Length: 77
Ligand SMILES: [Zn+2]
Image 1 (cartoon, rainbow, N blue to C red):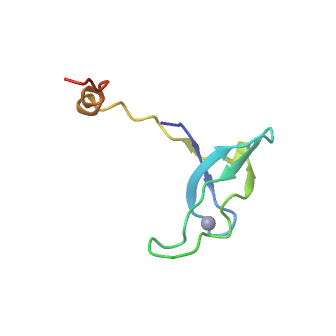
Image 2: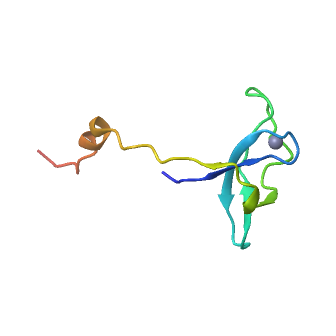
């Protein structure tokens, strides 16, 4: 699970995840829709914004112990 900073979309001004890019000091706006049922992405998706404008950093969720136990290497018998 990645830990992405939160940024404002330059088009819809929504708060979305900022994905790291190769450009130093810049973040790419994560793909998002303006409404949940829209068929097209917001035009602000993939736009580059300065990393200094990040609002907060998304915390990594702790791994669920039930899921971790279920993912065991499969055996034949
Ligand atoms: Zn947007």
